[in-house]
Length: 334
Length: 288
Image (cartoon, rainbow over all chains, first blue to last red; front, top):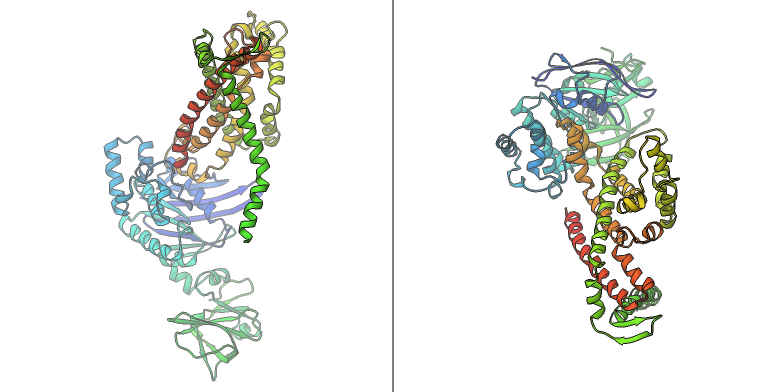
């Protein structure tokens, strides 16, 4: 079980309202990712759900009971912190067993659960070490282990991968996804990295300044972003936006075209421009093309082997079915 | 060449400090050792020649020796206990966000700036005086017989005075240690179901253990040598004669430099024994 409902919750620090009234429904077993730029309130929202911060108004329901006034320990949620928050003076075994010890389990039951968790997370050989003697990825797993043994209704992750290097991050991403597949427990995951959001989530919640911009599956967000902010935030590299004459041709204030939906040619096309930097990744090439009348260079994703050089004049053609149109409020035009 | 030049230049420039420090330590130490083997009575015949280990034997066999060692240990232990327990509680209190935090912190540190002689006099005359002291008035307000602190509870009085002086030091070090505790650890413990007392016992106290050992180490070094507080208040009477004070009495009151020097050598040995124990504890704690 792990169904969480947020009902008109708000949060203010002094006079500053960081989260205006907000509703959200998280279903049992879902992997929900809160994503947004720094300072958008996503961590605050997670801490409200955890109970580490008190809501200013509104109600939080967990599995049908009002949890708004319930202290964090009694909500049946487990949290993995950005800094891992391991207890440095305890061995890995004691770290993982800590919540069980606090719950008053006997030693044998503690050991059995810790050993089971350690096996799942490949930590069996490290149980007697201190956190200081572990690598970043292992510490991360200890933090997850400490969360698993509590058998919580939901896991809360607060940017858990941001302290790892890039290669390890990809690994841990897969491991957390695997874990979700095998445990089938609700997970709420906060990140500022849209790649993590796209790859892991069942449901993405895009936040900006405490406001939910859009909720949906990764592909929903990719294909039908509700507004310009979501369109620009989801997808890598970022969507290109065209205004003025480019857009009025399509009866819109702004149009957006993803780099992968632009075709590029030496000879003819809809818009023309000069090639700036081109990034060769082997599988793909990203071209940054200066187009007259567009302030930022237009990003084009092309195949791995294209023979464009710096300063070449190229012609771009958007895929007409893949153009996103936005009105002057930035909202999507269907 | 350049490095050799700068190396010798560095040596020359460091020399004054090294010479001064060596002199500071070696001259008194050698003189103490030298006198401890002599019968030297400045007002009763002066230097009366070498006596071997006589002074050492006499110092230890004197009836005042073992009580003075005991007094020293009681004072050091008592002050350490009070300053660390109160220091931990005060630092937790001062770490809480509260109105006027800056001023309160300065006030807490203030006793550390008061000279030992002055603070002992203030305590003796303003608080502990059985006729005019604030404590006497307080006792009388409740209809009780005022306590004659410095004669009836002399050792406790000195422990209170010295603790008052050293509490700010302990609080300051422990406060900085508490401030370096990652708040996410406390939050994690809270989520793990640890009530406030368990959070204190399992998270805060282990985090402070290093700072506590440092406080113990530094305070012990200074507490073994307290003198002014005893000199000003009881003058070594009523069972407050520490080893330091006993040496002072031997040298200046009995005018027996040789005997006092032998006592000084014992004090060095005692301090070193304590230091070895402490270094072991600290070493173990700093490894973690």
